[in-house]
Image (cartoon, helix red, strand yellow):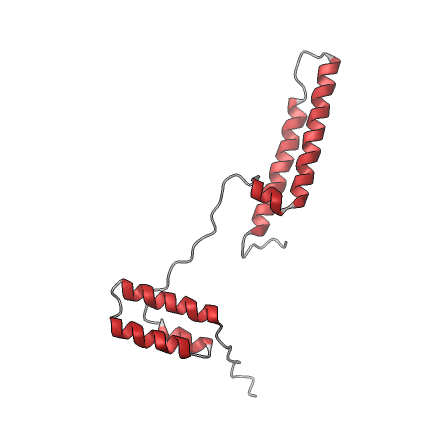
Length: 144
């Protein structure tokens, strides 16, 4: 095999479906006639290689890829279910804050001093959740 010619990759069913959806949406937008849609779809499902699929949609606008949504608040129930380390972190924060409040109540100090350590404990929990959410994004430069 010649090294200058790249190996052709076989198209998967999901590749064919993605191209078929592009062709169908172009037909529904009026960019293709019904006959063109039928011809292209027949060709899509008979295609074996990925480079042949690209030729079928070269003259059509590519659909926009949905961007991953940002929930805004990284500490959700789904995140706690998905990452057991976050549950442990939340448990440690809850225990420490409870102990600090009990110590304050027993000590009888007038100023509510546990608010500062509790704040920083919650900040650490939020940072941990944020890092986990960032790592879970596809194409993230941070390794998981």
